[in-house]
Image (cartoon, rainbow, N blue to C red; front, side):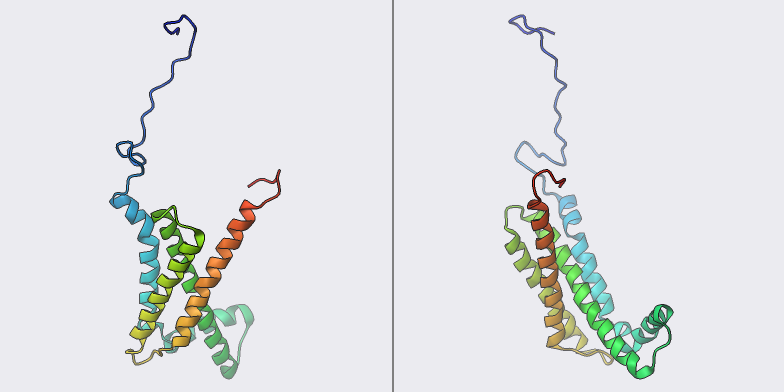
Amino acid sequence: MSNSSGSATAEKPPHFPRRSIIQDGKGPERGFTFWLSTWWPVVVAIGVIALESTPWGGADHTSGPLRSIYEFFFGPVADERWEHIHHYTRKTGHFVGYGFLCLTWLRALRLSFPKFSFIKYAEFAVLGTGIVAAVDEFHQHFLPNRGSSPWDVLLDCCGAAFMCIAVWAVLYAIRHQPPGQPK
C-alpha cells in the first residue's frame, strides 16, 4: 500500500485495547472482578485460620492425627516425647501458617497499591497478619479446650516478618543478578 507521498507502507491492523485492561483510556479497570481476584487469597487464608480456631483445632483433637503422620515417617514415639514434638509441631504451624497469610497480604497490597514501596507493603502485611492473630487468640480465650497467649501472636507476627524478609531476599536476588544471567 502506498501513502499520499507515493512510498510503500505496510498496513497496520487496528488496535483494540482489551476492556478488562483499559477503561476509556484512563488506566486499569478496578471493577468487582479485579478486587475479587486480588483479595480472595487473603479471605481464604483468614477463613482457614478461623476454621483452625475452633474447638476441633485444639491440641486434644490434633494430637492423634499428627502423631499418626509422625509415626508413619519416623516410627513409634513415647508419649512424653510426643507431647514435646506435638507442641513444637503446632508452634511451627503457627509460624508457617501466618507467614503464608502475610504472603497473601503482600500480594493483595501490591496489586491494590502498585506505587507503594516494598517496605510499605511489608508493614501493612505484618500489621494485617498481627490483627488476624490477635483476633484469633482473643476468640480462643473463650473456647474450653483452647488456650490464648500473646506469645502466639508474637510468634505469628515473627512468621509474617520472616516471610516478608524471604520475599524481599528473593526479589533482591532476581533484580541484582550479574549481567548475562537469565532473569
